[in-house]
Length: 317
Length: 224
Ligand code: SF4
Image 1 (cartoon, rainbow over the protein chains, first blue to last red):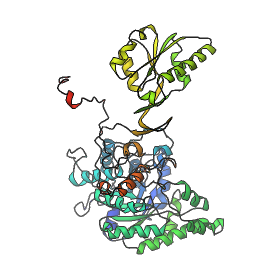
Image 2: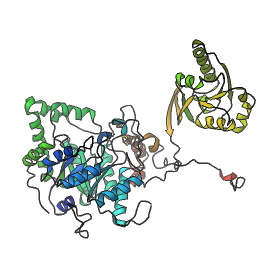
Image 3: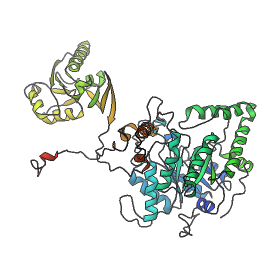
Image 4: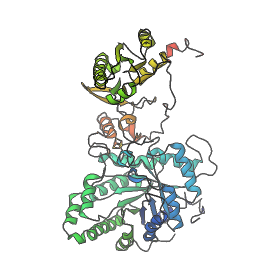
């Protein structure tokens, strides 16, 4: 196994991400979407450019409600390829029994980080009339995993024979309505036991600054590590799509104007420039512990972005 | 009340094809209120079916009868004489009524003519909106009288999720976000504290068939 259970006293999970954050480094994480099939080569291909560039890789769970290779399975391939996975789990597809079973299995195979999400509604995907499970919600999932880890108990109360020592993550969208509620939802996630937070892709810097300030004022950034989501725009088309078609996404006009303002061939480059400027600001911003780079279907660009953003080399802990 | 909508005519026609004598039973309760399965709808369905069967040169004997409520034994008893004269029964009641009718005449094929949709309210005449999923563990006290089990597409208890879009749910620009509404109502009532607490996992109580015995009747039915 790539990761062992050493340091279980000092750390909650001993994951690379946890060690990086505890050591006070600015974390840099990436993302890998499993294939629409059992194509292992495909996972390896996407994993290659991420190696050594990021501290941890989110492995998405049936994202946009399309069936894909299961998140834990792709996570195991990622471990084999030398990446540390962040096992994403959505509430849409499994009930509390299946969740706890998968959590134990994932931990048994060396997975050390987990991200708890509600999940995109099944209506968006390729099985729109599937029965959504939503037995528990994402905040309840965070609390359940914390209970499993810290109390060694299942949600139902029985003892666990070998509790899963996971570093628990949750998502936050500072841009959803109502804005004034968002920091309270963050507070609930922290209270439930979120060790780290990864935010929705950030384009609206004004709102992000305001949200982080609220989180600082409420003392939340001392209790959890916040990693801000950054997505480089590949093209004007993508910027417009993100602005209008993706629920909960907030893309200000100025971003669209900047991409529009350059030659078509230079749009991707401008997208990366904007992302790097954001990362530079986040590095200095109080309360932000790292950046989560979501280079959607752009894994091969990660080394370039990491380099230009000054994220290399990644610290060894 | 229970809300329903009539099944496509073709589905009903196909179910009845093998039979010559059919009794169409209506219900004067909820489905009559929502204009799906009362006396008037029984007559309409019979007219439609008669025409179809006549066009296909397979005329049938259709009779209609609407009882006060199909979810009550006393009212169903009115059908005791009429029902056995038919070869099959069509029920325009909700799913509960269909089953109670089938239980009363266990030797007869019974076909539902409506799809039971929801427990809901009358928005306008002819427009009905789902409001309750009968989860058996009502949470409306802390959600400002707005049901997250029914109205939130992800059945969240600690919402709103990150998908709310200008007050609408992420699944559609036409469906208001339940939690956005919950938030605003509680804010107006100065009760936001209710949703700042973490709501623990729901104890689902609708996973097995439920029977209700009201308090005053527990003695009477003891041992049942
Ligand atoms: S947008 Fe609102 S109603 Fe829709 S799933 Fe999210 S919280 Fe629920």
